[in-house]
Image 1 (cartoon, rainbow, N blue to C red):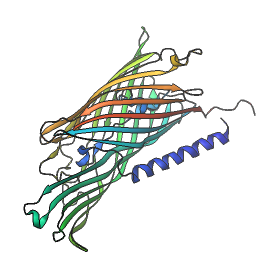
Image 2 (spheres, rainbow, N blue to C red; image 1 turned 135 degrees about the horizontal axis):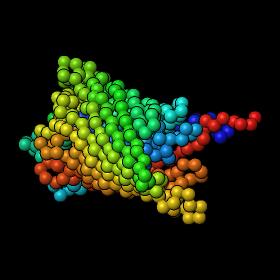
Image 3 (cartoon, rainbow, N blue to C red; image 1 turned 45 degrees about the vertical axis):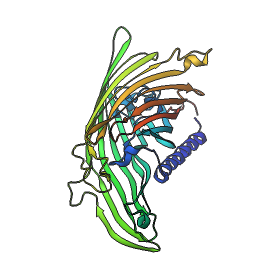
Image 4 (spheres, rainbow, N blue to C red; image 1 turned 120 degrees about the vertical axis):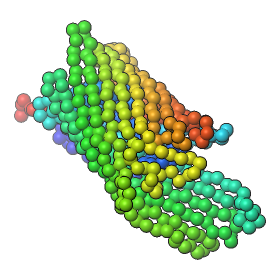
Length: 439
């Protein structure tokens, strides 16, 4: 690769990283769901378009053609002379149903950027930026006041936006069939929530309550993979990961205003350190295990299971993170996820038929969220499909994926959330670290 082209590509990646951070910070709704009203919002499904099109697996995945940051040890599954980068976009389309009423929402986001380079011999470095959680909701309701001629109609509104983002950097090394790795994780972001209680009559006060929560945290993640090739041509890989729990740092701005005509009075205003005079807010740790079986570059299957305990996160007691509704009581709980996926490539080296060189994928999953609603577990399940279209040479390609699923239900105060999510990933690969044999 020429130096001009190399520097141009690095510049493009830098711009994309800046655009990604700016878009995720400034976007009104990175995601939209009534379930994101609680805690730090909806936890983002980790992984690139490659992982997501296989149900979200990756703990035991080793593939030198794609970046897999779900297990820090997987970074060693790469060509020793290559530079690799992955840039992802996502589109979410959701339909919500409750008490016979329906609503629709669509969002578009830059959903991640990662790159990896070799360090020395069988070791490699990886770095990236991805969303971790998303907050996005907008509710309105109107009812008759108890004294209609005086108060008029009473309107209630709730709005929220923001989320947390994850910056990670790590490295891995292989010792024969065993690979180990570690990542440093930095979480940062802001959540805004506003609640309005207003009356139609001009002589009645309107009440505005708001929270602005700035958060950051630092933690780490370790991973291990063991790969064994058997005489029948099958390769079996087992993997495990563990992310350490950590405390959230930052500040909470808590305010309440009363407004009448052109006059506004401050009823409450405070700026407090997150966790001060409280037990502190924590991000739960997570443990995951997985097993994968493959035959060369022809096909592969994998099953993963992850578990995390949020019961001691204290999200239930912190204003701005806890539930503000008496009818919808959220509580932190234990979360788990079961995922399975498969990939099939008809003929990776076919020079006659392009479609035989494409990689086709499918997957299924079932998740239990880190909270309950009025004591009921909130679960989601879905199926995924995807394909990678080879482009140019090496392992460059365009990965496309779709996730079709459902969360929640229609019993009690639950909301049935049906969704179709599309993901697009650009896989960049080139040889950068080859010594020149001739000047």
